[in-house]
Amino acid sequence: MSETLPEVRNLTGETPPEVRNPTDEAPPEVRNPTDEAPPEVRNLTGETLPEVRNLTGETPPEVRNPTDEAPPEVRNLTCETAPEVRNPTCETAPEVRNPTGETLLEVRNPTGETLLEVRNLTVNLKLDNGPDVAAVERVSFTLRRGETLGVVGESGCGKTLTASAIIGLLPHTGYVAGGEILFEGEDLTKKSPRQMRELRGRKISMIFQDPMSSLNPVYRIETQMREALRAHGKVSVKEARELSAGMLRKVGIPLPETRLREYPYQLSGGQRQRVMIAMSLLSKPSLLIADEPTSSLDVTIQAQILELLRTLQREMNAACILITHDMGVVTENADKILVMYAGRVAEYGPAGEIFSRPMHPYTQRLLGSIPRLDVDSDYLTTIEGAAPSLDRMPTGCRFCPRCPLRCGTCHEQEPPAFRVGEHVVFCRRAASGGDA
Image (cartoon, rainbow, N blue to C red; front, side, top):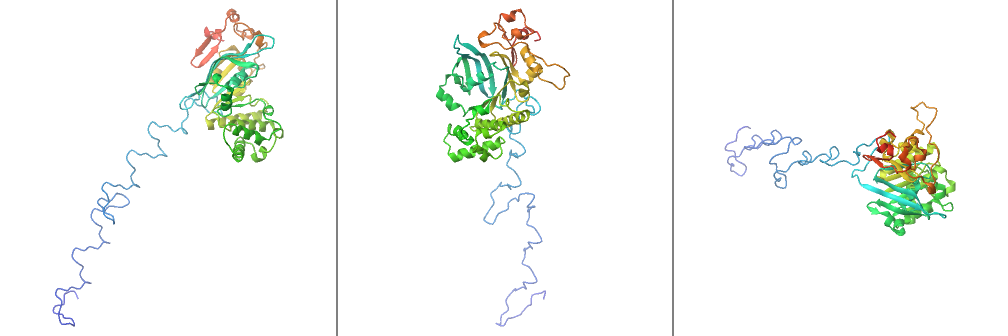
């Protein structure tokens, strides 16, 4: 069966010439496709096949396997950022410290944009039986987005009046007598009352000292929060209710839907303060003014409210003015500190510098009045005397009658400004190089 059978004829009588047995010999040049791979074929999982044609025709030249090789100069977005581009969520501004453990020093937003600049602000009050008096005189400071400015001083020194001038809520006897209040580059002192109403609550919000006197006792919480929303935009009743409940939940009030139907007197002091914070943040303002937000609360609730303010401020990248007479409150919450006395600035600068090296005698004694665990002392520092009355301000340095370091010229001349970087102190001893 291995050779061709010669002279074999079929039933028709003729033998076909050169007929071979197809089961014994394969056609010439035909190879077994399962035994030998085509020439130049490489491992499909390792390299791209050169000159391989697909079933539809021909693969275009220079086409690479997209799953094996990334385009040139393309990097993994999840592991490496593009050159010169910084990740805003992963990289903090320089000199930022742990807000829960240390005082933040010179915290700025990535662009360093100045949000608020107050220049030589003077606020006068009208008296019934005398000339107008300057309750706030030549106050200046700047505030960037994301920063917290702590304004400290004794009662009556002009802290709240300065904030009221910024937001446009001065008492009927008060008026801005001089200076500028630049918010986002615009002078607020030149705006009409109508323009200030549009700005107030939308871009600038204020948390007042006593929430019980700020909330209307005859309206439900939902009504008051809905009014704050609808005053600055077209919001339906349903949307306002949902936004209000979400903000109450965000500030830590349990069962927000139930609380919305309640009246202010049905809430505790801490809950009322949280409602005020929620109302002030509904429109996501750029500037938040907190006027002693924890003065009527116990220590535990006070810490919770301050932590809540820090958290919400970071989320919105908002600037904050924290007004207080408690130096301990601003220790862990302020980036800059403005110390006021009798309507004027005594000292202003980064919190770290003022706490580590206070230069004004008034600031030194305010810090000395705070109990410290690392100092063994039976007595705290006190300040003799009392703050002067508005209609009987002393000439020269206003702290001179109470200052133990006063000199002869302090009674006669106003103290010059002594500046070291952003640290400014109004004291003649500091300006002359003496240790106040």
